[in-house]
Image (cartoon, rainbow, N blue to C red; front, side):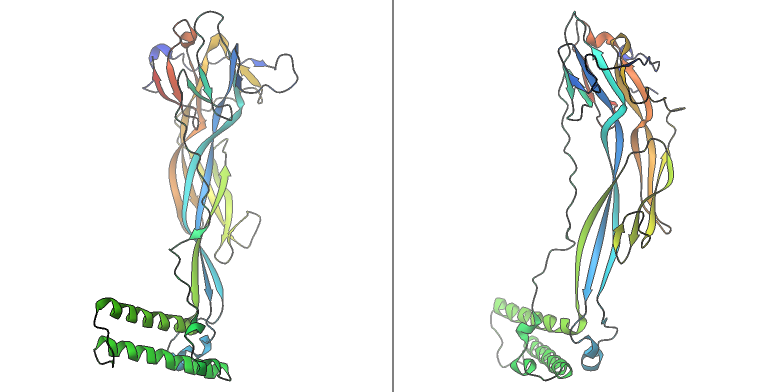
Length: 361
């Protein structure tokens, strides 16, 4: 399979010659970088970052929840605190990391024009004779409220002296319920025009009704309880060397949220990474992670494969995406013509998949 954007005069096919070499003059491992005489670079391996967004709902029962049905005819009011988690979304984000079995060194010719190379901070080949546009690093979202935070109202601010001086919880609940009924009667009288005093302008009337609604809502929480909702984001990194089926990604509990794989309090969530067979077979790794040297001054790059990523549990699939995977593809070479006297071809590489994004002579 060839990429249309690469001109045939620059492609040398799939045949590669790997020659393991050691760093010269030192026992330290060979590392990527650019010198006057050569450039050493990694090809990328695709890492998958699974971002799990969850919603945590926390309920706190009201102080008078046991009296809700007696005084306000409120049925099914919960009287126990609870915390409920749910998964709202799962996303897959690919990124490039150095493939430690694909470190190449290209020696510059003593004659002709020396090409310009650009590497990423990790030493992955990014561009030749041009500058690659730097892509922003995805940031991990911090826990934020699922909805804009509402002003917290303290129901005790609306309790009368009689309520606060009551000698028992039952008596306090009864008096609070009477106060709620009084607020409702006052609001109904205003809206029907039957109150002793009704504001003549719309803004004042609106303010008065909003104040009554706020008082009623605050006092009702003493019976119904309060709920808070917030979002939490978790990330799990997966770097596949081969297709996988039913790899345990994390565990999830509606009571505890996202859990590590060894915590049996949660149900399993798996990931399938299915190769779409863009190529007949994988290429063999290049010599147990040792440095390999370009023969005939070739420049190496990848044509990535594709995979279908599915994250799921026993009941449903959270996401299914097609993603390009560098290590599921093949390594190819670009001819030494770009290293000759007219070494002015401008090439930009995808640092996530290793593929050629653009090439211009």
